[in-house]
Amino acid sequence: MDKDALAELFATASLGAPENAVGFVMWRVVHRYVREIDQALAPLDLTHLQFQTLALAAWLNRTGGPVTQSGLATSGDIHPMQVSQILKTLERKGFVARARSDDDIRAKRVEVTDPGAAALRAALPLVIEVQHRIFGDEGLPGGNLLNTLLRLDNA
Image (cartoon, rainbow, N blue to C red):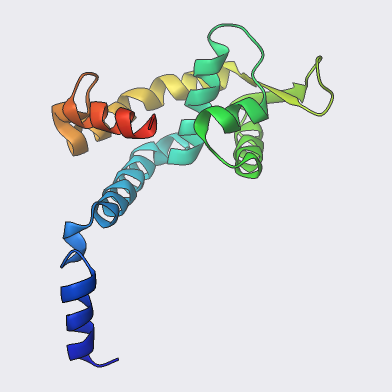
C-alpha cells in the first residue's frame, strides 16, 4: 500500500491519529506505569506483577479466611496459569507459602509469609509514589481518574 493510500485510510477510517484513540493512549500509559513500577521495585527483587499478586494475596488474607490460587485469579482478573507461575516465583523468594486446601484437594491455599509482608511494607510506599507522580491527585481515592477507571472496571 502506498503512502497516499495509507494517509487516506487514516483520514477516513480512523480517529485521525493514534493520540486520538483512548486505547492507544491507555496502552502507552499502562506500559509507562508498569515500567516505572518495575524500576522502583527492582531493589526489592519484585516486579509489578509480583507486587500486584502479593498485595492482592495479602488483601484477601487480611480477614483470615482461606485464599486460593483460583480466588486470586478471579479477584485479580488474571489467567490462572499466570497466577500459578507468579506464585511459584514468590514462593521461591519466600514471600508466600502454598499448601493443599483442606476443603478441596485440587486447590492450593496461599498465605503471605513474614518476609512477604515485610517486602510489601517496603514496596507500598514506592508504588504509591510512582502512582502519584504519574497520575497526580486525580489517581488518589476520590480523584476523577480513579473514579472513572473504577466505573469502567465495573461496567
